[in-house]
Amino acid sequence: MNFIETYNLTGIIVGLATFLIIGIFHPLVIKGEYYFGLRCRWAFLAAGIAGLAISVAVADFIVSSLCGVFAFSSLWGIHELYEQRKRVEKGWFPKRDKKTADK
Image (cartoon, rainbow, N blue to C red):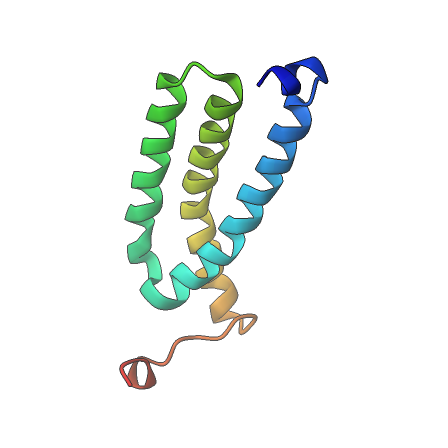
């Protein structure tokens, strides 16, 4: 941590990690809607609440910030599940066939 503070790398680390977290949530929302539909919104909600609780409980700035980014990305994922459903209905993404899914 001393190296990070000495060279003022906190912003770069938080920015890079934020970029990666948001980038990971994009396919999570797509796959979640594909395999579970809107039922996975509860997992996003639980992850968001947990991230918020950890963010408040942790004193370290970087860890607290990244937990907050994770929390709000999870909560935003709930909204994106509904948007993803609309994109599937428009034909922009494939719809899961229930008959072939069980094979």
